[in-house]
Image (cartoon, rainbow over all chains, first blue to last red):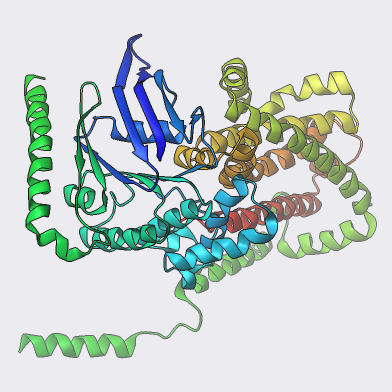
Length: 264
Length: 270
């Protein structure tokens, strides 16, 4: 069943200095099935975060449309939750308070909020840190809270904007692995923006490759590897094949970027 | 050889080091205060300064007892305190909402920012004569001066606190469906609380100054009035008692606000 339909989507930003609008993404059409895990890769400036935030309802559509479960997106909604690159935790609230925050904003009934929040804190392995404040946690732990906060509101669609982008390589791998485990439980539709090629392949059913000027979809690459996935897959021939193809795409973009900077 | 030598020196230095009972810095601070009071007490006796102009700690102490016993102290204190409390409460009630409005509305800012900045920077005491003409020499003019002195630091700091709120947090809140009111109460207020309290702390100083100067300028009673009376009568000892009381009041209140400030700030990373 198709859950997300994107049709001829175009998003422009007004630039403060010139009257001309900057086209962040253009001509994007895509259908996403329920339960699919989609990763989005592309050189910086290709509009991958813009696409994600538009689906989240945090960026306005200029033309075209995004529909989720046949409802047109025109703002944030209970059917979606976002995990941001910056953990965006309230510094004056504890881990528990932060996970409760999303539930409170979505007006969940008071009596089950606490228990529910605790359950998701346990799911991301932070039950010993329930009363800690964000500044007492490591970057990886903060991102776990961020993920728990998003999962707790039981969204139909989970939107993740480079959630592991600020973490070191090792933590990143562990987090990717754990995310897979959590996702396997109820296989919610997920969109995941990243610039890490291995991460993109490892997580995805399909990888969306985006190009820039303007931001557009260059290729949709289906990843035919069985689930559940494990770290051994990184070494497989299949994985190497996907990796090579993605790298070619991205290097193309990088090359054109270098050209631009040299001219400038 | 030289190594052995330097080791021996080190041991010597350790042995000679005086073991301070309290920390060294505290000892020095206390000592400096003691020396100051001693010098103040002895200098007039030795004829080094004219005691009529400097008074002495012992005289100030005796004057303090007089002031509390016979000077109608509570009457004057109550008047000054009333002026302060009324003016300050009024300032709080107006400045926090106004600062919040300015911090969240661009149009309000465009409209009100220039005059506010001018009033924030200018000493509001320059308006004192006008207040007296408009409101008379009793309580209302003093309340107005306290109000005017206290209001601007709170407005400006509330505004700054709201504007400096983390845009990422607001975005995260919105992604969960927070409306404008939620963002205001759950994000803007808590994140600007330290800044608001800093404004309140600055305002305390200005408010106290407002009461004292207001009463010094023209009044029939109050702590400032007493300061003026004893100043013109050359009663340095009593004058110092009142000065001390005012300082202690301002210091205590400021410290209390700072305590509160530290409490709401303690979630912040160092």
